[in-house]
Length: 199
Image (cartoon, rainbow, N blue to C red; front, side, top):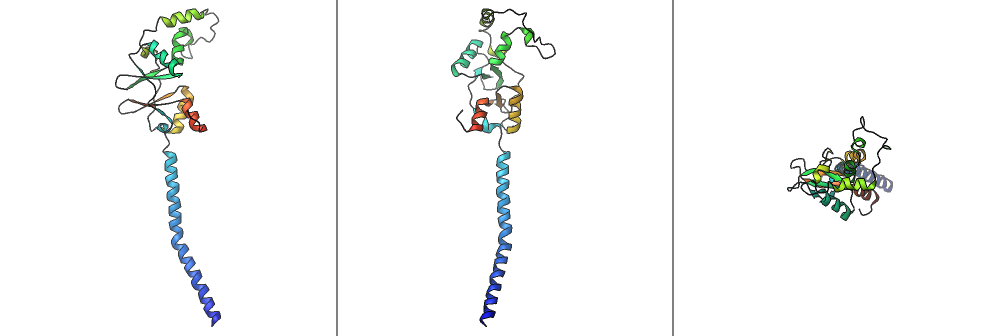
């Protein structure tokens, strides 16, 4: 009798365990799948808005070249988004675009017409300074890169990094509907995100 009771007890135990497994396993799998989906959705949601610098320093399109250069020096930055009085993005001004206007025109043409050997050019530092000084009163928009394509806030992180690599400029982030500047993706900002250091 004791032996029979023992066998019956073991049988009930195993049946209960199997039943619990059959009920719990699908729910555990569903919960795990749901968590993975949530994690994947979070990973996919990483966009340029995640890494951009919000409210960057800007310069008005009506400001002079001298004002824009002062801002570059004061804040020790390479680029300034140019905006109108409504905050609508107009172009990107920076050291690179400034150099384009200081160098001889023959050196800054497109690849097919560019002259790579400038040994025949005998400009001195004083010549370059004079050339720049003569244009300091002009509107900064004349010196801005207006061809650089801004990115939308929902641009994927991978696409943003690729554009940053290709253009070698900080990237303005613009609201597609209004054209207003939202932020700036910078090399320092990306480096800070990758290394966990403050920008």
